[in-house]
Length: 216
Image (tube, rainbow, N blue to C red; front, side, top):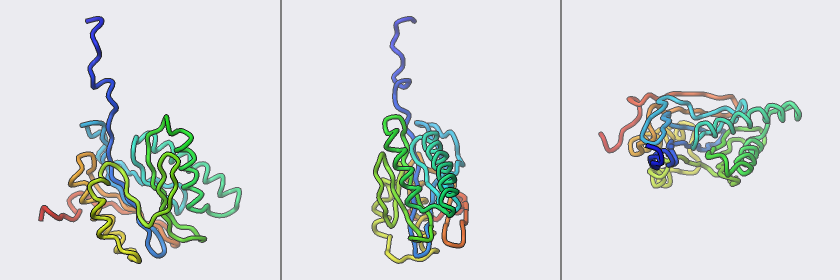
C-alpha cells in the first residue's frame, strides 16, 4: 500500500566478510586469502581469488567491498605500469603501497575497502604493508577481514622472527584454515601467492585439503 515504510533490510548496510593475510620471510613474502564472497547472509561467489597482482612481483590482498577493492587494485596496477616505464625498472613495493594509501584516503567516504600490499623489490627485499583509509605501516605480517578477529591470538602466538619460506606458507595456511572454520563469512578454498627474487608462485588449497585442529 502507498505510504507504507520500506522494509528495514532495504536500508541496512550489506555486511561483507573475508580473511586475508601476508607475511614476510627472508627473501620474499607469502600472501593468502579465502575465496568466499558474501553479502549479508548470502554467499554470492564461492571461489573468488582475492589476491590481485599490482605488478610482476607485487600483489595485494583484498577485503571489504569486492567492487571497491578491485577498482583500487586496477587503478594502482595501471599507475604502476606507467611509473615502471618512466623509471625504466620495476617499481618498489613501498611505491605500490603508497598509491593504495593515497587512493584509499582520497575516497575514504565513498569506498569501503582494506588492502594489504606485499611483494619483493631489489632495494628492500620482501615487504608487507597494511593500508587503511590513509594509514600506511610496514609490518612483518598483517591480517585483515572479518575472519582476522578469530585468529589474532593464533598469529601472535605462532609468529616467530626469521621463519623460512616453507614455514611462512604453512603459517598462512593454518591461519586461513582456522579463520574459515570460525568465521561464517570466510570459506571456500585457500589461495596462496609466494613472491621472491626468482618470481611468483601461485597455489590453491582445496577446502578438503586444509588442515584441521579442533575437529581432529
